[in-house]
Image 1 (cartoon, rainbow, N blue to C red):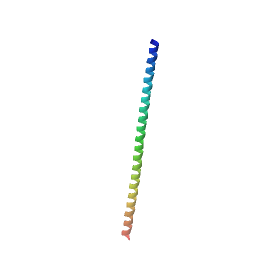
Image 2 (cartoon, helix red, strand yellow):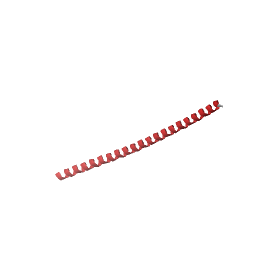
Image 3 (cartoon, rainbow, N blue to C red):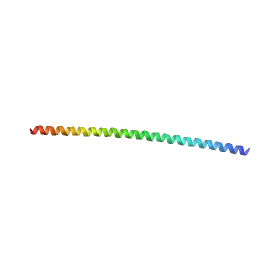
Length: 76
């Protein structure tokens, strides 16, 4: 009888260990998904910032060109 109880105890321990391992993997995958989502958001922000920076630089260039045109027209 003691051998049967020991085997049952080992089986319960094994099952509990497998449940914990599954939980650990699930949490690990969840954390990885969250990390990837944060990374995607960061890249989207960086891309938007880069586009905005390019537009600002283009507007500054166009403004400078207009200033130079006006300055040239005043001389003539």
